[in-house]
Image 1: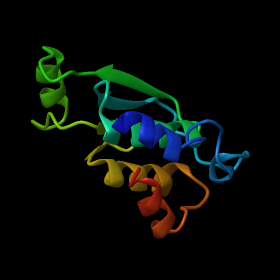
Image 2: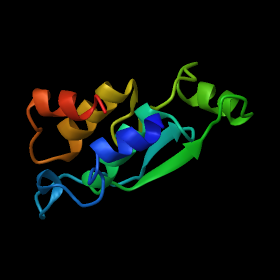
Image 3: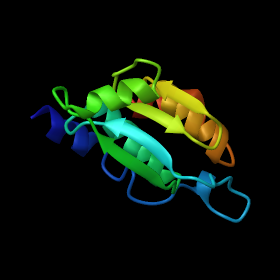
Length: 125
């Protein structure tokens, strides 16, 4: 039930490219970003929505809680197995915590960052 309520309250998020990512001046990574994630993680969902809104190419690596790929993830993230976790091969950044990832994406790949209150409000659903 919780997922359905969250979907309803966040209707439209991640459906179209946001104005902050449109146009030839919007920064674009030369290499795809890497997102470690697992199905059903509501925090990963927030990050995926922003990746779509900013029209960023990324590789999704599914690492369920008992997945043997968690060892590979730990090797690539300095021991972290927390999801979501973003690796940016363009900057060398390794970021976990959905709010920090979202802020990182806007800081590096958007023309401007929406006011923090809007990001904070949208991330509560």
